[in-house]
Image (cartoon, rainbow, N blue to C red):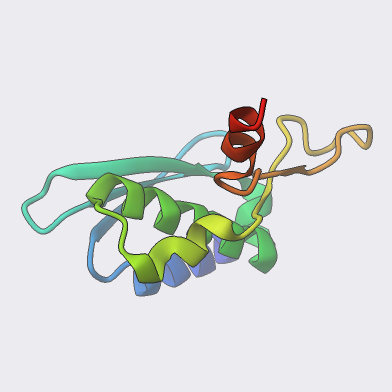
Length: 119
């Protein structure tokens, strides 16, 4: 398991070189990532589940969610970043071992608002 954790840490460290990522292992096997800007201000913290550490697709989905959140935090949204918000990203269920839970999807930004405006 530690090799999966080490691989995830290395992957995330390489992707977020513009920030100062800090990782903390937790007793339940999850991993906490803190991203700080150059002045040391914490921008965000995320928990990386064990399944995300082992599965490359889930880890990449996490990376995309973090990038979207960073764009929102740092704002303003540039025109060339709009595509990030139009992509559907699978989210983990709260109980991933329960087969009755289906993966949730992120609603495409704007479609709900357009539907509500039409009412």
